[in-house]
Each structure stands twice: as C-alpha cells, then as structure tokens.
Length: 115
View 1 (cartoon, rainbow, N blue to C red):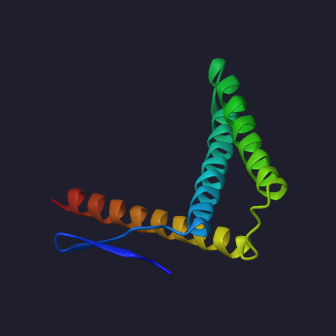
View 2 (cartoon, rainbow, N blue to C red):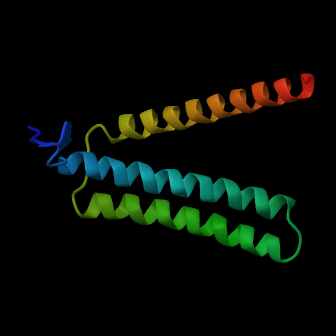
C-alpha cells in the first residue's frame, strides 16, 4: 500500500494515497470556511463602518467556499463514504487543540501573575 524510500536514516513515504489528499483538502477548506464565517459574523456584529462591510465579505466568502467545495466534490465524484466521520474527527481535533492552547495560555498567565 505504501512505498518507503530510505533517505539517510529517515524513512519517508514515496506515495500518498489520493483518498488521504482528498480528505486533507476537504478538511482544510471546510475549516477555512467555518473560521471565515465565524470571523465574519464577529466582525460584522462588533465592527463599525468599513469593518462591518469587511465582516460581511468574510462571511460570504466562507459560505461560498464551503458550498463550492461540497458541490464540486459531489459533481466530480469525490464522495468519501466516511466524509462525515472525517469532518467530525477534524472538528474534534481542532476543538481539542483550541482547548489545549487556552489551558496553556491560562497556566502561563497564572504563572506570570504570581511572580
């Protein structure tokens, strides 16, 4: 399934399966679109003047990217039967990373405030 080429003492995969690349692109684009929608909504709600317009553009771009990618994946035949599981796993990974980062920042701030 995977071919490995020895490069010095480091073994690197010589080929990445197309399905994994498709999953990578799907997760990347959907994560991008989710964060664009969130950033756009935040900027539109709390911004003033031009920043509200920028927030609206971010929101629309996020929605367009998600709709275009999911439509193209459906039309051109990239339909992973486990796509929902891939997206859910990626979502949980992102949430876990954010929680870990927040905990690390809180520990850092606590340590700084006590010194």
